[in-house]
Image (cartoon, rainbow, N blue to C red; front, side, top):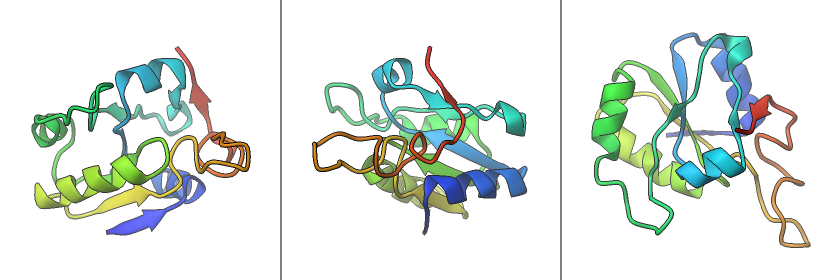
Length: 133
């Protein structure tokens, strides 16, 4: 499995019309933190929770992924900081997806010296398009 930063993932999405961003964070994160805005690429991210807010794994993840995205699509998996998306990437590979890329710095990136995200790395810190609901 490949790993990319958020900035590299944006470039990959722009260069590969068959690639799809899959955001595996929770519904609360999508709503309160924000989601990637792919309007410039004429696409929308696929939103499928890897785990719920209570930490319960989404037992239907691979089934939901299969409904949303065909198995010949290149997947770029995104979570807050690259950990859940790595697990989801492994599940996608096990489900038969051939090209799965983990976005290693996630949407919010690593913790800084003040234990806050969004200042060192990640989708938002890279200045990539995003929106809040």
